[in-house]
Amino acid sequence: MLTTTPLTFPMDPVLGGPLTWLDPQTILTALGDQLDDKPRSEHRNWRACRMVEALYHPGRYVRAAYVLSEDPDLQADRAWPEGQIVYIHSPARSPMSRRGTLLCVGNVEVEAYVFPNDRRLRGLRKFAGKQAAATTWQEWIDAGDGDFRIDETSLQRLMVRYVPEQKWIVRLRAEGKNAKGETEKRRIAVRSADPDVCRRLADRHTSLRDAEAAQTSVFQIPQVVGFSPEQGILAVEWIRGQRLIDVLRDNDPSAVMQRVAGVLAGVHGARVSNLVSLTEVANCARVQEATDDLAAVRPLLRERLSSLSKELQSCLTRLETVAPVTLHNDFHWNQLSIKKDRWALLDLERMCLGDPMIDVANFAMQIRLLAFRPDANVAQDTARLWSNHFLEEWLGHTGESIDAVRFNSYAALTCLELARGMMRHLRLGWDELINDCVEEAESLLCDPQAKVGGQ
Image (tube, rainbow, N blue to C red; front, side, top):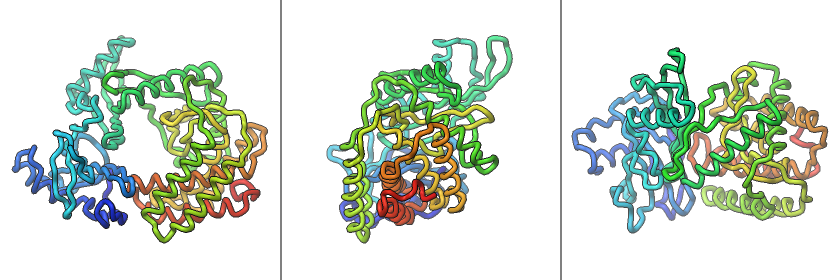
């Protein structure tokens, strides 16, 4: 969703004090006055600005994407194209890309790039125009089963995510005729990213889909429908469904979590090639990166974060080695798309080999932390109950006990990484969530032998 609620901006002496110049209204004024690669008449017509995405590294740089529109009541969704998209990079680099324009926003010099002039997302331009998007999609269909003809007038695009210089994901939807002459609808998700990233994702979708089909039917993996590795473009089927939170609200949570446990066990049992191992050293580095970034924006928590970092890294280094499994490595409540009995597993970017408790603890803790996220609207008792249901069903599904020290260590890591992730993307409520996550992590490490999940 686009940001419509006033944001809290961090203080960053390196990047220019309080980053209030990222405020959409300030950006709107600066772009209208200074951006030179659009007619001046069009600048004057921009009346609304919303932040789409931000990527903030404390003390290093910030990249933020905005949509500008002539509609003063710009809706809080990512229907695209609804306006002009621009992304801002600060501090200005030297030399900066010739695609960029140097602007002064709130006495800070920044680079501005008009979408889709993102130098690292080479394949993005193929989908900036509606006709080009339909043509590319049809080429993929013709190279596959060739049994569908797109009605170009029906094509719709919805921006799912745009992180400047990192990735861009858009959903395409269209009606058309199948081989029998019948009208049907199709949906795909198209990603523009680094070519190597797209190659890895294509391999994972294919191999995990094959493994899932051979071993179990508890979950579904979106099928690859188009791939242009030289351009960094990957398209997979878009599987519609409900969020897990909504399914939990409307059904018996114990039964729902039984299915979740089955999905995760299926992932852990799959054999996927070319996965790297998530080592103890890597996990300790994750702790250090999270606490360093959080301390940079929360100086008053610096001592607590430093102590927490040392204690957690010490716990992680003392854990006994276990047989590695295939990890999703980002398994949380929003990685499932559910429609009746069809459960689709999403987002395979971080897959690796490692301790299965990493996925278990991350999922359980992400559910518990819903109570601290204003966008989730989940009561604390409800979040804790759902989390406990999952742990009970995981225990019942695997028949293996959950080691409290191992669980609490990885759960504390989840707290720190969630807080850091919300801060880095300037999500609504990021500043308050940091305090909640630090307290939760400290509580988990206070008594490592405490009962798992605080049941």
